[in-house]
Image 1: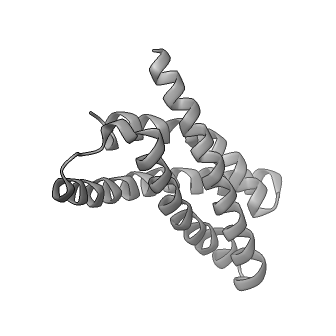
Image 2: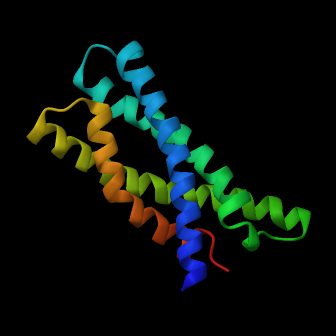
Image 3: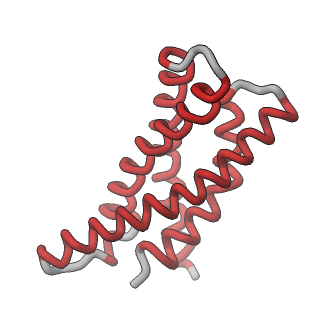
Length: 140
């Protein structure tokens, strides 16, 4: 149980880095690229920002959080990394769709800026992300 708690704390640190990347990219796209239109600001910008954070989070998760679960043989490692990234991206996309729904609900009821709505939705969806990562993507 202690090992799982330590891994979760590492995951939270990784999530902070991903959140910073995602928030910066979201701010850049929503305020400077898709400045006109609901879909660009509240759907396309979060999707682009999310994909950037997925790449950063996967790299840190693979090399730091679940480093003890890496394949030892180089060819097997490459295949496993590609497969893990694909599954990580798909599961992240499912969590993203859930989070996007939360973002839109928070925006509808509060009228807050997209960045604040996204941060609120991230807090809720983070636990789901850890469970999927620990028990599916980076399983022993």
